[in-house]
Length: 469
Image 1 (cartoon, rainbow, N blue to C red):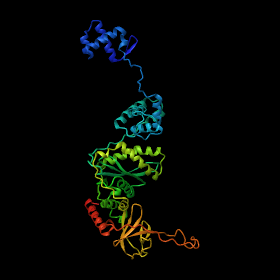
Image 2: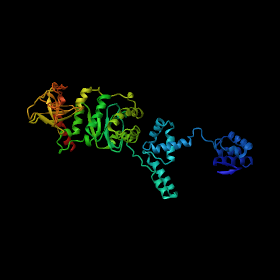
Image 3: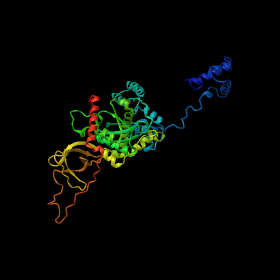
Image 4: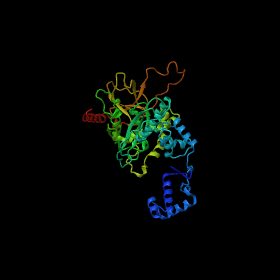
């Protein structure tokens, strides 16, 4: 900047002024001046005319000193920064923009939110490494010029970590062709960690199911599978992790009901759904990116909704996923769906089951998960099977239990250690004994027949052998 006649000119304005002055002094031709400045002869004539009227003041841009019409007021910028620090600190810039508009009535662009927050060194949890390095260099310079140790300590706390990148892969052409499924342990609500089981369609990016459990369990994946079957139908394939729930059974663990891979894959086998597993996170990058996004967004939404219990969180997911899919997923109407029709509530309940071999003991009962059960018929009357009778104990999705043997299905009724009500003391005189409650027992289906299940177990053993388990 150079001071000319008490007027401050920028570098370009000073260059224009000097060029026109040389023309008027006879030291340069207008044609040469036009080439130097890269303008037309008409513009040079306008420069000369303006110089004669107002001198150096004519070259000052008319908007200098004016505040842009769309400038965000300083008090609003301070309010946005305070809200992000106190309320939306765990949200990304784009999510913070949405929350400010929806909950605070502040409608500004995402770029404005980013600019305001970065100017105050407020970094998003998903800040890029390049941006983080720029802020670090800026803060290091500020730290050197800080006057006290307290100021230096405050500056050091303003640097946040950067988010890790995820690899890309081509998407499937059909809706329902590949469903990526996994679970993520995270402090989703409150201080105690919980596990979110989720499934996402590879083609559209639609989150087709999600469910919270304390740990990664077969029950959590069954609930996600139940949501998929009820809402969309039967998918073509699941692509998931081969650890924990989806790993092959260990030889030292003979409890069939704890062999989660066999249980889940047998349910898929009944519905004709293929299951493929991988130990490479990059192979299922879509579900990994989903959890990265949800870990930034969902805890904020749950906290603002005042949710700290598991049941309330699962209920919240029902409405949250609708809005999430509308914002982030591709429209499924543009693609052909390969989902088969839903098999119906009863079949879903009986398919998403845990099957295990059991033998009738000398007390005409079977044990399951440290509880004893007696077999009863449709009328609720005990049906005593001979000791050492082998069969399949089936726990349906709704926790109803059955015992299948010899082409027959019987209901199971828990035998409690003590009766809840005494028939001698608690029953009033003259009160009639209530008849046994009738049981809704389904017909024997081929998935519950012992030879069919044994055949599947044999194939699983062969598959484990090939996999080197």
